[in-house]
Length: 280
Image (cartoon, rainbow, N blue to C red; front, side, top):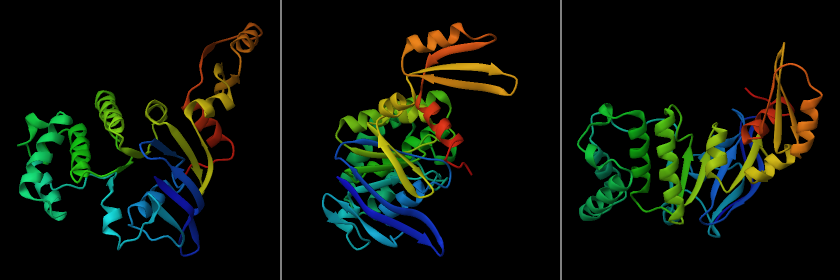
């Protein structure tokens, strides 16, 4: 279990994360959402001990997380947005290098590498250097590397950024299978469809504050389960309804072009960004 208690991070006079209180249960697939500059990456930075909190604390299974607690840090693996692998190394070499950093035995590294590359569908490409891999393969390899030490918590910062639609869906399937193994996953993403498909619960952040924690269904139900998109001279204007019959009654009174559909998490995000959330 991950517990953030009054977690705060300031950089000089700027407050990047402001007194966050949040509990993520063991085995949960949790999403952290918000516009650019909301404080998501800084929060992840404190979970990985890259940043030290200005105040507040992070607890993992009740134990205080600090840079000196290597036993707790070993429970956590982070996959960053950036590709952080040597371009001239093969998959096997990437995995071996990671294992040596954690003082794993050669036998354990070989066995775990075989298992993980096979699980992620990368085994036939293990002798390729990183520079010859597709973007999707690189992302999968980063996940394999993060899982090498058998962590209990996997933190993913925009794991499908830059992927095509097929590679993104393959990554979704992979993450879903990992979560089924009771791996706790914390995900940040700007793809609302991704968050809606994968996450058990979601937290909405802005300006460093935690605004709301809910399920995708809960966020959508609050806005309205049905959407009528009206095509206007200034662009698309969306109208939200809790009941389908109310949406249909609204349509009967309309002229021009319009569509009726189910509301998505992206609608929720757009409405909030267009209201009091500021996108930068």
